[in-house]
Image (cartoon, rainbow, N blue to C red):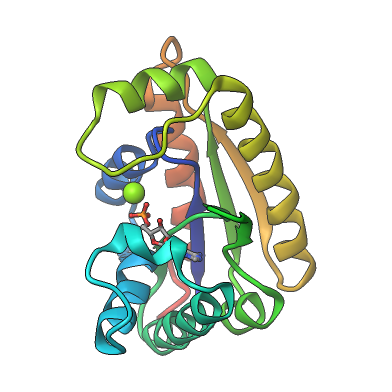
Length: 196
Ligand code: AMP
Ligand code: MG
């Protein structure tokens, strides 16, 4: 049976760092797939964008087609190995929040777990200010809180259309990364033996 874990969290929450360390520690050998990378490859092929940060400004229906193409590729990959999808529960577009996994798309992927990495808005803001590589929109703490609230709601709707369990992992400065990594490793290790 395929084993697919989606990992979500808003920019600055520490998702990439936790993921990288957890993959090294897990006994299950996951293939890490960045959903935005797959969508971006399809978008470039179709001549729609030149930079990945342009994607969230595309027409929502066009973004949905890219999501579906990426999802189909993941289903194929998941036949032979467990997949960890680095992605977003919702994407903030100039005209409103876009669902990262509309019904048709989540049904195709049918993940086992939806992991949400969270931190406090002030921790997130601090991390964003220290990482200025990306073309990120500047947000207030209130906007960050609202986005995280919405992501929980979105995760529930994804669980409604798949067999997924929801796992919320907090990544706080004081607690350190270690505990968050450990909680993710526990989820990943459930894939051990699934492909034998
Ligand atoms: P990231 O590098 O993970 O921040 O993702 C880069 C971009 O990929 C995002 O800004 C979105 O435009 C796109 N992206 C990633 N995951 C999704 C998704 N599930 N649905 C729609 N767009 C996505
Ligand atoms: Mg990332």
